[in-house]
Image (cartoon, rainbow, N blue to C red; front, side, top):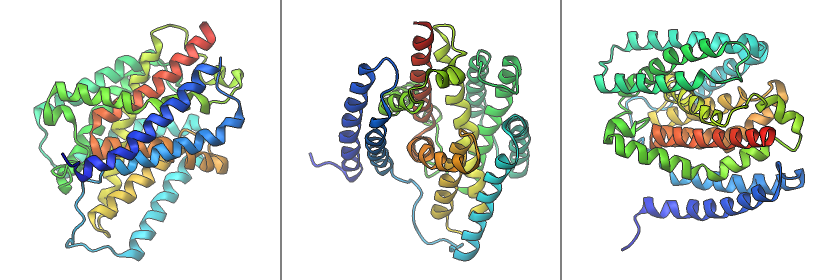
Length: 345
């Protein structure tokens, strides 16, 4: 039977995934801690090829067709530049202990205002599912020792507010703009049931294997750096806490923020171009939040955004939420597990 065009698109990624998994797996078992820097250039190139193959294998579901709102190139570019400048300027001008509390306490307010303004009806099933995911993020957030600006209890409570409002507001924007019908930002659970959602989560774990390996290598070979970042891992069960960022960051960082900026950009652009611009802008900004900041942070964000944030954005918004959660969870889980063994083995 002849392969469909969509199936044919996946073959290069399958080949790249196998090659990257073997390459990084070999490195992983060779070292007591991440390999020497001389392998970093090769590792980055292999991961870049695997990343590009993944992005190509996930088609954009938004139809490219004439609309009543043709792209106005000048205003569109200007709006992107202004939005990008604001996004990057705020965390640059504020230190992290000041910026992140502002962000996480402001997000529920912004999402609730969005829900009120759009006046979209919410299905009971999606509301229940959003709160179930929030509960999982809240429970796992209770044991997270990485948050300097909030106690574990407060961090756990924040998830109960941020996760459901972000999911519901993001889905409401996608429904309001018609993109939800096209399959953007869909939940496999809501569309196909729990069995399909679980399979999607497992597929996310499988896809993430080479990214999970290189996430260990990215930390470098300095044990002191590892201790500073992941020295809080003391119990064997703590790697499971990776479920919290896996759920929460997909909710607010992709399901909500990307459609929110799409809502702004589509005023001067066709839907497909507007959504692509929002996805890439938010993706690299999200990566920037994981850096120390400043000019060096922007350089790091280009690498992190390309290798990690864009694959997650494509999986979450162009495939489904559950695959992205599995992918995100596995990347952090492997790093947490490695750190636990490194410091407690």
